[in-house]
Length: 60
Image 1 (cartoon, helix red, strand yellow):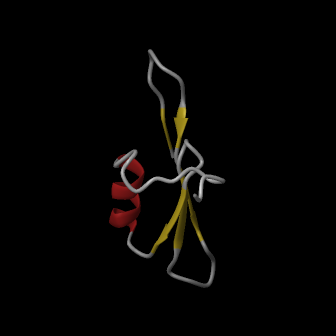
Image 2 (image 1 turned 60 degrees about the horizontal axis):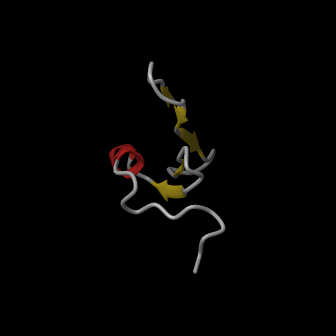
């Protein structure tokens, strides 16, 4: 899935289903990652930027 703005840069949101499970793995355009079983929870996390987001490699 992606959202394209006519005036700004492209933001890509990716959600993968982990085969054999009910787990979704999401990657935000900022590089933050999240897993959830509920698709609504996943989209709320993605679109709630920056709340709940920690960019990879920034685990201090």
